[in-house]
Image (cartoon, rainbow, N blue to C red; front, side, top):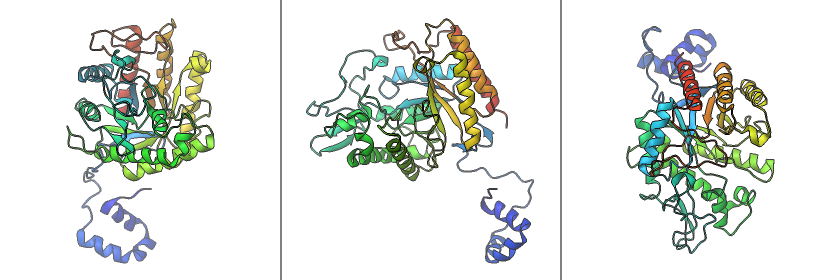
Amino acid sequence: MKLSGRTGMCKFIAVTAVAQRALLAGIIVILAFGCPSSAADPMPRDVDDDFVRREGAHFVLGRKPFFIAGVNNHYLTFGSEQEVLRVLDDAVQLGANVVRTFLQPVIGAPDGSVSTVWDWRRDIETSNLGVHGTYLLYWDKTKKKMSINWGENGFRKVDFLVAEAKKRHLRLILAFADFWAYTGGAQQMSAWYGSGDKSHFFFSDPRTKEDYRTWVREVAQHVNTLTGIAYKDDPTIFGWDLMNEPVARSSGLQSQWISEMAAYVKSVDPNHLVTSGQANVSDKLSDIADPNLDFAVWHGYPLYYRLTVTQFDLLIRDFCSRARQYGKPVLLEEFGYARSNADQAEAYQRWLRTIQEDPDCAGWVIWRLVSRQDNNNYPEDEHDQFDLHNDGGRTWDVVRKAAADLGSKSATP
């Protein structure tokens, strides 16, 4: 049982005779300041009531449960302001309470003197990774080290995202980095040191590990230029992913890196929840027992794992039951089912109903909500066909209804 403040100490003294004698000096101090006059008095508001916390296998906000109905979007840190606003507004229309994205892009040197592992200068629409000159991290050839772009074409865009999410009462899950090289990610950070190794160097080399810690520290301590609030103190941020889908060459190295970096994140930002960002399907939530992680996540795509709609539904139930076993929330942080499947809407309806009805499930974050680009068109998505649009279609209505159901569940103490 957790006892806090003077109220808790007085209750403790009242019910424990042994403690009364052992804590005599403490009692004197308490009496000097006084105990609350009555148990019926309203409890004082906790200073951190605005932050989402966890209690056992559930998230809580204040004194109410907080179930996640969320969306992913991959371009919120490099899209135009209007493109970002359209996504956030569509998230509100959907009834979402959480939006997840990654802190990106990462490049070589802006002048090209240090190569970039992806074509960051392509003149294409934002959703297809046209970043239009935006980058957050780069290699400073003069200082010969990683540097952060805090300017208008850099972290200022993240400030804008956080400020606008705050206005709409949306929470953000932010991944400190992406493992994949689509916009640089961990692969670019390894390439700064001449490595093309994809799944070992970044997680083991002292230089990349120190760069990662520096990045975490600078982001957590950064004061938003638009809100005046340090990121570590802003409840708009739901929590941190260490990385989107970190894939180390060995499970031992991966576990070691996750545990080490999760502990570091908590040391510089004790206010926010931390998770790994792992896909976590094949290894069955292997990191859920790590004491430095507040909750577990998994990324589910039936096509990639050759699962039927029914088999995926059973996997949801299995992973949620693990939440109860380990006493931590488990979040379906990414999932998608192609619109070329005639039963897409029905599949989503079934899975989201399972999450809503299972008391051990913490929520879902669909991949991915995409809104109209600056050319006023929805982007092409002919590869995965996972994009969700605010188009009034059957799938949109099913997901919106599921978000409303979870919202009602969160409103119940």
